[in-house]
Image (cartoon, rainbow, N blue to C red; front, side, top):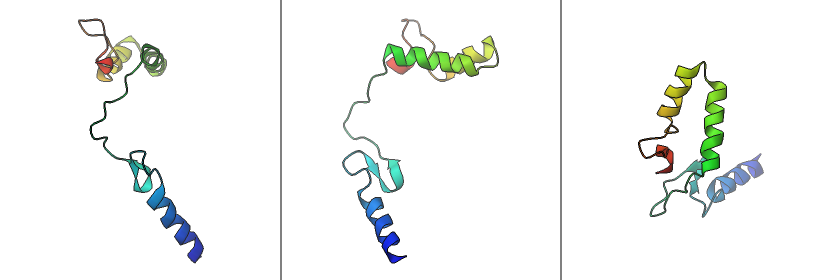
Length: 81
């Protein structure tokens, strides 16, 4: 029983060390690092997933807008800015 507690403490201490993760797998904020860019393919797949789960055209349009997946005036979705 005592061994499993030690293993758990070890995993909590070293899980994600150096990967922006701290105790329990909860991500920490990345200081000074730029967020990775979202590719056109990722946007396309996300749009398809939203369309597949939407109840109708109006629901789909609303969800795409809420998620930043609908194009703005410049033609690019907000998630890619």
